[in-house]
Image 1 (cartoon, rainbow, N blue to C red):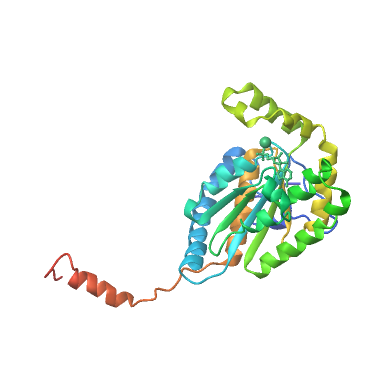
Image 2 (image 1 turned 120 degrees about the vertical axis):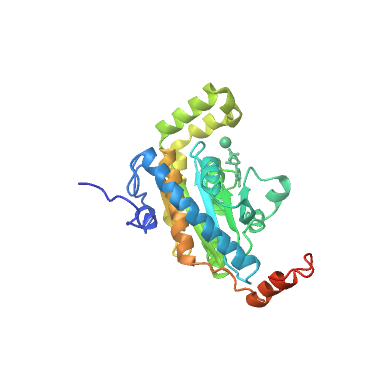
Length: 293
Ligand code: AMP
Ligand code: MG
């Protein structure tokens, strides 16, 4: 059967993780939208223009219009799944002034002494901004659980805490969108090989990447629990088929676009008399004394 083409099917509907937490599509699938790199690139052009316009409106609304809304995109996935590539390609379409990227690494000693959400709260996007998390609070139930960095009694309650935290964000005007970049173990192998074999990519490789890779099954289990327990009405998870970079970029751009279309941000109304100001400039430009038109 021919699959649906174009964007008529909501990408959010197609990729959303529903009750039970099952991942709806395999890493190499292209369930909605383009089925080739060329098609995806063509689609991204129009999407980029519309995204940029909506982002500017959100920014203007939040910065000048007294609006309180913002968007937070959480990116999670195994090494090489494309968190950085998504930021480069999807956010490259927008005005950097309105975007805030936060990357969460191994916690510093100070961060470790604080509650796990402490460093996260500091990076929640202010009104008008689109925040992007490259890794996130979910590491505290992923790597922390797999590597047993704290005992189960400590990480177990975090799923509920995370749900409460995200509900709080939603109530305060932040639309939370979470994307799990779903790559296969085979594709990760190819990407790690490429990192090692390409001098310009070698800086991205870390010898510990192979130790993490060895725990693939444990991470699958930990991700399954995240998707099962933390895909909520307030803050849904989307599972992005991510073996093909062009599909990943297209899908995430589309999900953001659908989200911003729903928010429908409005450019603020001028707080001055436009006609009067035009008249002033045309008839009384202070630099063109006597210039009458
Ligand atoms: P990268 O994203 O490749 O720069 O790597 C960042 C590293 O920081 C990854 O190995 C993560 O697992 C690790 N990391 C991020 N957050 C935490 C956390 N809360 N606890 C422990 N390790 C973390
Ligand atoms: Mg890495």
